[in-house]
Length: 332
Image (cartoon, rainbow, N blue to C red; front, side, top):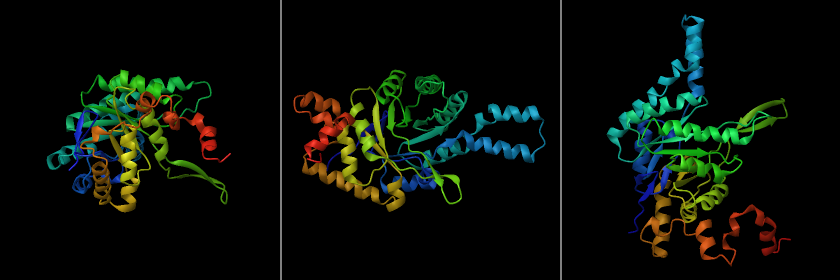
């Protein structure tokens, strides 16, 4: 029987499948269902700063407070204690489950991140995923300023806690390799590629804007996992578009230590985890691999560039080869 154990952000996982941040991981019972279904780890449903801003507004409307007190709460006085529900869930879950529990936090106020992280560590979380995103809206602010915020947040948290930290990036970054490298230099234990958001849409009947669910792009994750694998000194996890065991195999071949999924489990139920793992095991047996590390990164950009430098095998990961690829298949 092939060994499916993998190491991700310093944590030992029984297999590479992680149930990503979603409603399925938003309760102790949900975490236990994920473990029973065979998940290697879970990322808890993210907590967002905006959630607590809303609660403060409700508080201000229903409780008689001095305006200065309300202002204090909005600036962080209450927010620093915001993750209480998540922390209690972590405490309860750690008593009942053996799989790694990775918390996830999403804030806009940089000063709040270390406080959130400290509370989560004290609750017993095995790791922490930073769900960072700054919309580059200002006309006079260069992209480098936004990306510097990622590094600053990570450094402040690394100075506060000692549990492993992963950073979940968005694909909308000027240079994914550069930022990933800077994060690794600052102590990042893993990079997750990528974060997928709600997308904007316009209803042309009633002339209103609306949000629609975004979709993960499997091939985009695959490209950047392959381009970063073994070139930066931290683990990689893919996120988005995983549909079956073949997709999991592809991500590991590209260099991923683990793969996060959510939509697949909503569509087919958590029971599909066993099917994905069975497909992985069958493929490993067929190719005579005894462990995940025997083939992880075998088709990464770095490995292919070193192994097939004159054959152009690694060219497939470059968008610049667009026309070349079409000529190869006689499309143009």
